[in-house]
Length: 224
Image 1: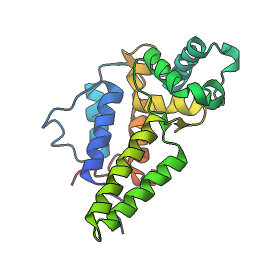
Image 2 (image 1 turned 120 degrees about the vertical axis):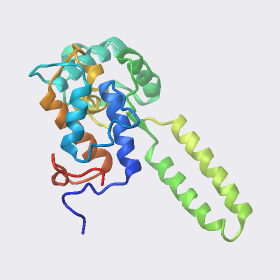
Image 3 (image 1 turned 180 degrees about the horizontal axis):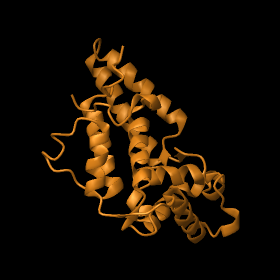
């Protein structure tokens, strides 16, 4: 049974989350800067100390929505009044032009959104061929290597033709951008809501490490 006072995650996965935090808040951790950090609360305090902002009580998700709405109007010509929190992204970005329009969106925003993924059928086929190749290589290495090559080719094709959204609505995209690009979606990047930042850091840990919401709190030990 997992210890409720310890974060049940590999150190490599935790390091990946720390890299996402660096991107989200425009900071860099020194090689030894986190050596004395043991708990989630200590990590949050360290991040807040590094983020040079004025603490204000406002909503960054709302600001992200406004920023996205302006970008959608510029790219697609959609009426501002027609873009709402529950507007489906597929209504704004048609399938045939989706990759091009997402690139345009990222150019306007100034950062990557990572909202497109492989089509489900291609992803399933790639995984299936990869697993089969891993088994076949033990019996016939030539067929196994051929299968590995096919897996790579399918993967490259899948990424090249990726047009399936990882989030569904403008509101969901707003929340994703706040979590991954907090400073960049702020109206004033020199301000921020520190209570909100702690909640967003917690959300990053929960979503990317796929742990239960009750599994993390200020005293949770993240590094043994």
